[in-house]
Amino acid sequence: MLFPKLVRSGLLFLLAGITVAIADARAFKPEAALPQDANQLVREAIQNELNGEGKGKDRTHWRYHLHREDDRGSQDRDVIETKEGSLAKTLLINGRPLTPEQRDQDEERMKKLVNDPTERAKRDHRLHQDEDKARQLLKAIPDAFIFKYDGIDGNQVRLTFKPNNNYTPATRELTEA
Image: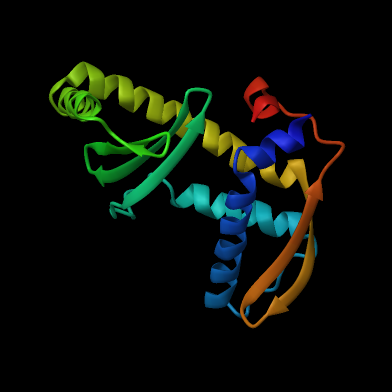
């Protein structure tokens, strides 16, 4: 079923971020009336976010800790974003510090990424594919869920949501999300 997979894939986190974006957007425009339909508000917030993407406005780079789990286990990485792309140093594998051999392998992986244009091109291609999938997921949110207003706290709009049982994903990726 689509919705448990959407929840597992972290869409709740995205929805929380969208709610914050909606609240922030409305906080700066108190004269702007809320659409009667909460789904329209979410649709507008997502479109606003997508319109701001890729226009060169935000040149900030982040450093963050990434915890990833998959069939092979878990990894914790220190990720640093640069204008040439992100570089991630592995800190833990399955909750344990790297062995000297694993550290050497990780250093080699990072050096190859920095020095090999083919590796960077592969990474960039994967990144663009992931970004396209994320945009598709964002655009699907107002259709995949039914939003309702749940109140206003100061400048923040509170929403509730539930799965839209009439939603049919447009692509296989959205079905598997």
